[in-house]
Image (cartoon, rainbow, N blue to C red; front, side, top):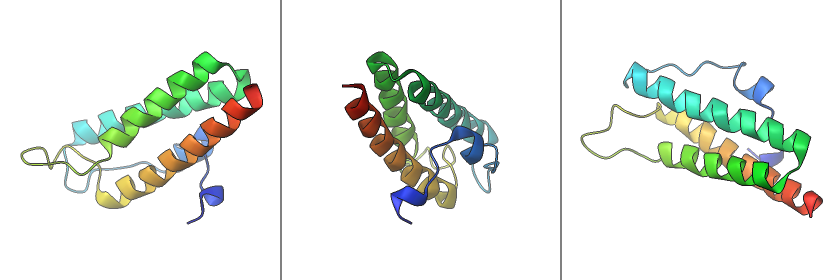
Length: 108
């Protein structure tokens, strides 16, 4: 899916789907979803404010989410999103990274 077709709008992206654990820890999935929601909220604020500091916070949050989406090693396999959801979120992380770069260019 091209990056242009992946929404970076938190209202569309997070509320439209509820990621549920198929095989993982419900607590871990909820925690990862919370990190994603925080990143999306920061992106929304960065799009409104166009401040370098807010863009930096958003980039840091996006990097953290990307780390949460990497395949888990033993004994942590249950502490991850189902691969289908993780793959979709990795694409969103890339779209957010591109959007942050665009916002940085326009703020400069």
